[in-house]
Length: 288
Image (cartoon, rainbow, N blue to C red; front, side, top):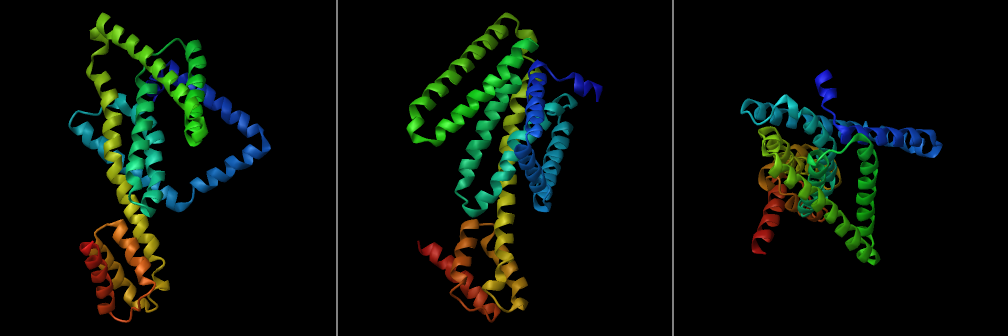
């Protein structure tokens, strides 16, 4: 544990300093404090907790596998936890949207990788003295927030381009400095540990996508299953319908939701009715 705490560098200390200051300031404001309590209560709802535990268990297995083959080491624990608490949770919370519209998986992937790039920038960028980091970190957060807000308003496109350009300039400045450090002292930079710090977040992001898709498929099926009583009055048919939807659609969210929409206009009295509804759905898709 002492080794883990000692691994925190100036940027992470500065980030913790500002995060603590923000939380204390928010806690002192009654309305913000009440909102924070509501957010915490929402987080501890059982489905969210189960999703978080599954995410942690999934990446726990990934870490164990990587440790066995020599890709992961205890020195990467901090990086893994930081990535899991940022891009990992973002991916998990995008799963309900993907369950509604499977095409949004590409948008979720883009957001995950964008955050991973920011994460790489934060974790692997050259560290400055602590005082400089305390000034730099909030400016970096403010710049990112301004870019995100300006993207939401089409009227602010010129502002967004200016801010994005400014961020690119900052990135190139630090990239140039990192390149100079590499050329002047390659032995201290070009190490296996440095390579792992760059590669692992990218690998984590790639492995997160199938997990997000699996969660989205589960949510889609569960949302249909709990509403079967509205389209099939005979509850004895429900187990057969569930098995048939799982086996015939094989996780295809689009087919599943299309079937449910069509099911409102059908009558399910026998298993044959169920089979016919699924067959007509698949035949209609194949005809298109």
